[in-house]
Image 1 (cartoon, rainbow, N blue to C red):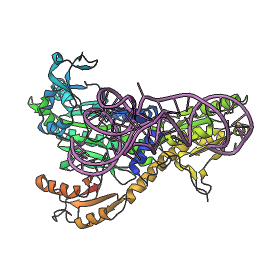
Image 2: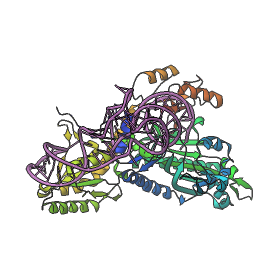
Image 3: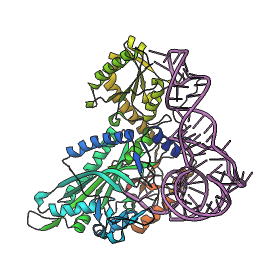
Image 4: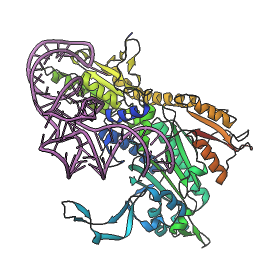
Length: 514
RNA sequence: CGGGACGUAGCGCAGUCUGGUAGCGCAUCACACUGGGGGUGUGGGGGUCGUAGGUUCGAAUCCUAUCGUCCCGACCA
């Protein structure tokens, strides 16, 4: 019996946190920048983000939302208008106080005391306030509504503890901001955005998610309702992968977003905001990664098929290369999942067998290796990243296929890989949500039971608020647990609240979380 | 921000306690042999030891400060 020699040095089950970091460096996705909490996103990581951007941007535009760009610097006063918003963000703000540097006389530079800003600018942690200002100018009449805007950009939040992709001080995201005439319209938009995120996560990133409403204590500062999609990582922890907020008139009142209705009366608009970020990439890693590195779902893979020619510094190399080029061209002319197939002929120097492992770690969905004898036989040697190993031999499960046959199957193979990554994650997720817990004692037993990756619980509760809720949150915290959301499609409650014993009103998910 | 650990070649580490020519493995480069799959051999290249001060004849090693990273906690849209 052969021993499989994995491409990574750390296994998931040995040290999940260390494994996560190794995937990022081994797949060459990102690296530390030397600036606290900030990372350099390298081509493979950024390429994945560009794919997510492209696919999500299409969905955003299909909903009639238009892209805009607002400044990264926001006047401090904007933040002071909405009390909860201030409260929520004040502690993690980067603040610009000077506009010039001056020599300190010791060879260094310091902010010029003469160049102090009268009003400090904050680096945006989110753009509700500055977009709200614009909306107040742009909205006059009911005819101006709904106003549907989106922005792709970066934001900064001075986090205490950072982890690459999952929580960085600076991150890339998309933030939608909309204004509507009625609460109903705004809530519909909140739901639409949430559903858009669900579809993007599940169909594009192959991340099974649970869409639902956040409880009061998990709301966005200033929001009336916060909804999220929650994904389960391989260690059983939850990752909030996207949020959508119904803001009521809170921000409209703070910024003065008012319109005249058909009767000529001044009304406050109802606004929403919704966003997903580069955090999703962390979710892809922790959902689809394995002990050989990343596995990128084909829809978001910068290269779906990588062709590695086996070159030997001999005259016959040229023929192999042109054969590979023919294979590349025939694949690139095809479509898979509604887009041209993305194929890379990797001509970088080096042995194909060694380069293979780089692409395995990066997680290219299909790797083709082509040597002189493949060429003679009109074949290609194919590896599926999602089914890398032959369990019997302990070696990579290389399949030799006639090139025409592979070409005719390529699109459906990619679809198949996309589907199987989703199915694998979905069945793991489903197997790790436990229902039917009736008492708090069972919750304690469940999470103290020694299971390394205990997963989630769905429990019934009476939705306490205020102090009663705080008490429950503290109770959860003692087990490092948090509320995730009240799933949109969870069944109706039919029992007692596990916290208060009162009749339950809904079902809510409990988990450890990133 | 509190507690702990750490920073030495691209990656992983030893050396630090007890100051005295900066090392090992992998990777990389050259050449040769290989050639249906992470090959072998021989020979090279690469580091002002995170940064800045200090102590000393001499500092990776001792002291101080600072920046960054990881783990635990607090915080977290």
